[in-house]
Amino acid sequence: MTYLLYIVVGLAIVVFQTTLPMHFRLFESLYDLFLLSVVYLGFYRPIREGFAFVLLFGFVMDGMSGGPFGLYMSCYFWLYVGMLLLTQFMRVSNNLILPLVVVGCVLIQNIVFLGTMAVFVPEVRVPSLSYQRVIIQLVWAVVTGPIVILVFRDWHRNLEKWLKTFEPEYR
Image (cartoon, rainbow, N blue to C red):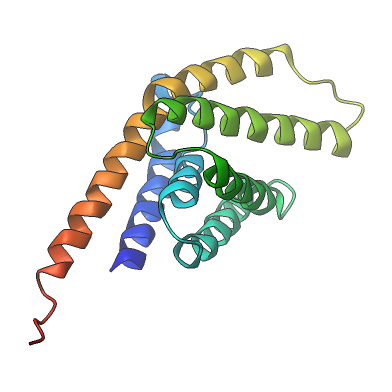
């Protein structure tokens, strides 16, 4: 059931990211919401649950983006590995680090994407509007990122509690 939840959330993110930014100017500079899934899976779920979905999310985004294939997948993979390493020496239960982690992920992803653009198309300079867009994405990440991760964590906990009510009792 957990895997079904990840699939439903992933499809909802795909629908949200492909429809709303085109129709509402407010969401035009929204960051990549799959980063929140990567942070959640890296911080709160075991590797056997998170690893496959991180790669699946990357594959889906690579197919939809039109950029170099493997860019999203490798970015998500390394951010996921980074989240796993952070859990080695940081207290994940401290919710105050979530804004910093989400902002760091958004910043790293933007650096990777702008760096890839600079490598593949060296004659094109990075537009000055990119910096403004990155700053707007960082503000979005600070405001919405921790809230979305904590809500998803609570949904997942409630789902697990509800599913435990269906387990048979052994005597």
